Image 1 (cartoon, rainbow over the protein chains, first blue to last red):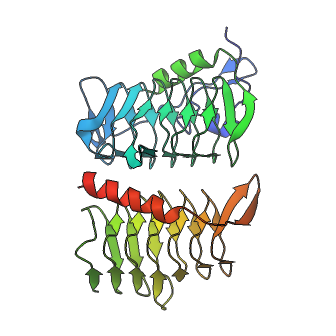
Image 2: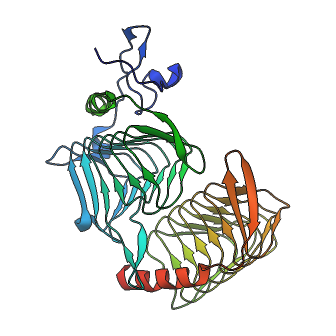
Image 3: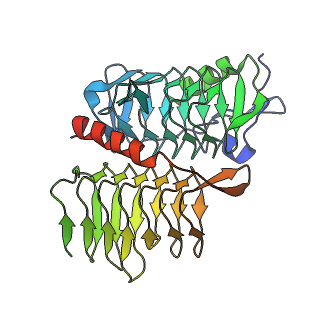
Length: 203
Length: 160
């Protein structure tokens, strides 16, 4: 049995109230995740199993690639018109998040850098993502601001209300928090399994 | 309810321009989709070459005219309610400026920073949050102008 991750969400959130924490282990017992019912008609289900809300706002759809079984909730804004955006499998992007490729000065000109998000990522409500690369198994909390050109490695948890300065590099298996975002903790190697379980279950 | 939008401003279909009062937008200004400009109780005047990104909200809740200078870079999710905002400023994501505040020129307001009413941010100041507190520092010079100019140039090529 994998040990529980050191940063537990509070019990209120654990009762399936937010997609970020569908499962919680308290004293050995596993709380059943609450079923989150969604209106079938409000979402478009693609061939690869993506569930994209009809109220999500996608620009430059020809440059947005979503690998499969990803959920895009209403109000999500993805700017594919600036640069290509790649989303991995089993990602969850919650309401009102903005995924926007960052810009970079290159040889005197300004170009928009493609944005890649890995598999099994969770991006909670209201976050602003302007990172260059987010690897697999990353959990980004509510109302975060991920600065431009950030590189977030695998298995990183970013707490709610964090502001990551531009060009921050987050090493794997860390927890980032605060404003400016700094490493505030470590994650066990089992975080990867936890993320896979979490996202697959939510889907 | 008049909207004086200069011919050279770039406004995509999904921008919300609300309010009964006049909204004036200068030349070269780019408004990104999902941006809101709400002249609720008074007119708004946005200068030239400004950049308003997604989810940014500019509201005028007082009856006096709201004037925003030129070359301002308002990033995602910012809320501007102040009556007087200077030029060449940069408002990082999710920052907010309350009614009654005044912002000078060449400032940088950091991400998620809120400036309360009655606060006056002078010229060339950077306001950022450091842990729990807010800090301000005077800058010798800012590159806001060159940054936003190159941004606007690139955007005009690829947008809409």
